[in-house]
Length: 442
Image 1 (cartoon, one colour):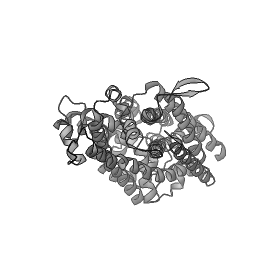
Image 2 (cartoon, helix red, strand yellow):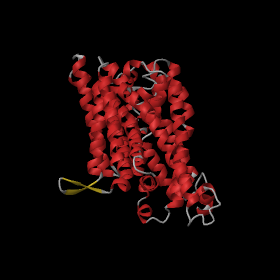
Image 3 (cartoon, helix red, strand yellow):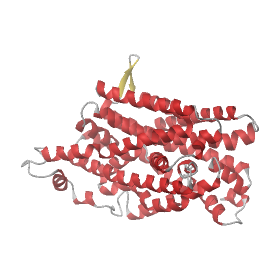
Image 4 (cartoon, helix red, strand yellow):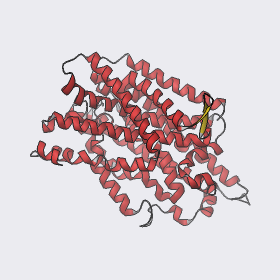
């Protein structure tokens, strides 16, 4: 990393915080902070859904699994492809609920504030686990670019113990100030950055393959031809064998689990349509935003295949494939562009964590603090409590990240964790006789 790289990163941080300060002026009540006044059109809803659903861990996880197993590794992210069309149906639910949190829905449907409180606790832990994966991804990428240790006050400190808390502070500053509106406006900018990082390495990597004297001695083959010559045929199989990490049966299991559980992911009350100006905006934003991620996934897979061709024998990557994206960025990008790559990955992290921070704060405020501790207080107090809770959520994500520091393990937790509250949601939506006791037993 050079001075231009650090200047790019510094400029990015300043821009995000400025947006948060600007949006803070418009916040007068809870609905403004937690749902942006329900005023967003198709463009912002699209990039909100894209940003919230695309974290910094997604290109890193795709790079890791593809580097190890070939194209079948894309299912670490691409399994959402088969869930996405159902968003057209679900997109209007959250708009019609007219609630600030999904916990409010559980309270109303099952006439139990305790069930709403239980959901809010689940939601906060879900956000902490989900967010921790994004923080881990940034540290894994920055490792080959900056080094796994840095000097702080004369002592050598592992990179993740400095970088992750610093990023957390930036997220807190603009999210705490501007609420969901700040998250959405930054998501628009960050979404463009995510699309940029998805294709940035591809032309440079293909050029490096065709120009490599070791891989292409005659210099007469294109990058794609070199890739096909060097990698085994199994690397181009979309579905792995029954013994592969992502076999057909495992992919089917993940798709079904996420189709059932995605509807109770807490941020869906906002990015799923609750913050949209109209029902049609909610549907278009949720579906188009998530299909954008599917196209970006193809770019991540191709980048990982290029890295697997160029760096298959690098000991550091063989030992820890999570470093693949960062190593490729360090080798292929020049000064300034490495900083841009990190800024784009930071955009992917922030566009997810900021929405989770705001929605999680709403859950605790609406379903724990107000009903059980201090009802009938003024909006100013509630807004400040929401901001403080948001800080706690980000802090929890940082703790989980530094404790687990295993992106694939963190990802697999998010597959199954939402199923706890999924059955009461589906029953409550479609069966009038679903009761409070049944929800608790479930």
